[in-house]
Image (tube, rainbow, N blue to C red):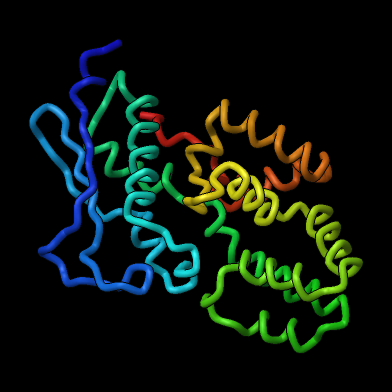
Amino acid sequence: MAKEFYDVSHKTYLNARIKPVLFQGKETFPLYVQVTYDRRSIFFKSYYFELFAQPKYEFLGMTLAQIDELEGRAIDYFISMAWKHFSLDDLLRQYRTISVDILDSFDDSFRQWLSVSLGAEGFPGLAGILGQSTNAVAGIRIWDDLFNILDPSIFERMEARLLNDGHPYIPLATYVRDKYPAGPFCLPLHEWHSIEKRVELEFFLDKSFGKRNKGRMTKQVRDRLYPEGFSPFRR
C-alpha cells in the first residue's frame, strides 16, 4: 500500500478558543477535528457534534466518545477510498458529503408523513400538531410513543403504510438501533455506500420487514442525498 496512507493522522479536540455551547444539556466547548498529513494540518468543525447538539437529540445521551467514533469512521473511510491521491484540500471539501446522517436527513419528512398518516387514522389533533410543529422532537421518539399508546391494529396499519410508501426512516433507524444498541444513533452516508454494510443492512431489512418497496426506499435516499450520483472521490 502507498506510503501516503500511513502518513495521515486525525484526532478530535475541544476548541477552547471558541465560545462554549450547549451539548446534551451541558455547556462545553465545540468539538473540532484535526487531520494531519505530510506535516500539514487542517482544522474544521465536527459535523456530528453540531448535529447532536440539537435539542431534539438530547434524549439520546450522546457522548463525546461516540462523536469521536463517528468522526473516526468518516475520516478512515475517506483515507481508504482516496489513499492513492490523498489531499487535505479534497478531504475538507468532501467531508460533509460522506458524513451526512441519513436518519437526520429524513427526520422532518418522516414527521410530516406521520401527520398525514395519523389524520387518516382519525387523529386530526395529533396530525395538526405534527403538521405545524417545529423541529424540536426527533421522529423516532414520536414513533416510540405511538407504539406504546396506539391500539396495536392501528399501529400495524401505520407501519404497513410506511413500508408500502417506502419511507426509509423507521427501517433504517431500526437497523441502527439493532447494530448499535448503546449508540450512536446515526447512519452516515459513507456507510450506506459501503458494500459490506449494504449487504448487512439489506439482510437485516429483509429479515425484519420483508422486501416491500426496498427499491423505493433506496431511491428516496438517492434522490434526496445524491441525485447526481455518489462520486465524492471523482477528480
